Length: 114
Image (cartoon, rainbow, N blue to C red):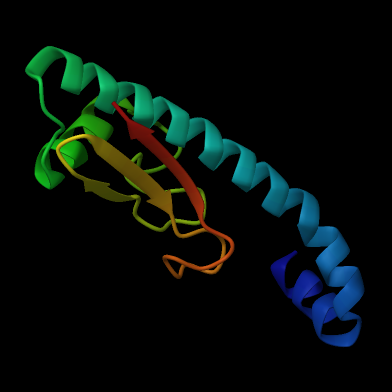
C-alpha cells in the first residue's frame, strides 16, 4: 500500500495529497485530544503540589497516566516526542506536527497560564 501511495505521489502529487489528507487530519485530531489530556494531567499535578512538573516528572506522568496499547504515549501520532516547557506561572506542551520540526507552522500547541 505504501509503495502504491508513493507511486501516486511521485506521478500525480495532487492525488497523493488528496489520499493522505484525511489520514493527516485524523492524526492531528488524535494528537489534539492527547494534548488536552496531557494538559489536564499537568494541571492536576500543579493543583496537588503547587508547582508544575519538571521535565522528568512530566515524562513520567505522561508515560504512567496515558498508557496505550497502540503507541508510546510520550510520542505524538507522527512518532515525535511531545515538547514541554514551563515557567512559575505557565506551561506549554507542543507536538512538532507532521514535519517533525518544532516551532514550525504545522505544530500543535497547548498552553496554560494561572
